[in-house]
Amino acid sequence: MNQLDVRIPIGGMFTIFGVVLMVYGLVSDKVMYERSLGINVNLWWGLVLLVFGSVMLWLAYRAYQKSKPKNPV
Image (cartoon, rainbow, N blue to C red; front, side, top):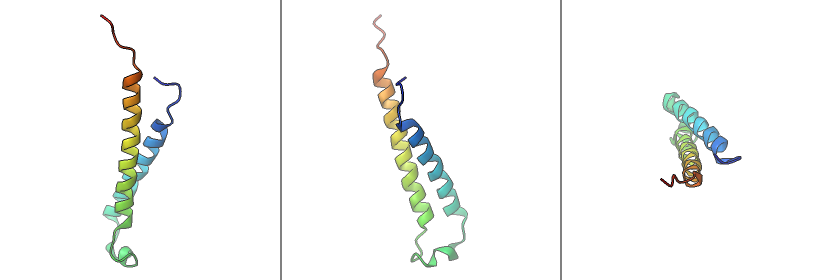
């Protein structure tokens, strides 16, 4: 594996925060979102964080797959 691929901890952190924020947005009371014009901002930003974290993890995995030595049979 690469020496230090910063995308792994960043992707993991954003993915975890995104999941936590999405769950909070799903279980929170709808009255809380009256000030934001009825938009569940926790749910939407949780989704954004989850997608960003997943992309970072995918890019790290892709870089790891490209850096693996080929097996010249």
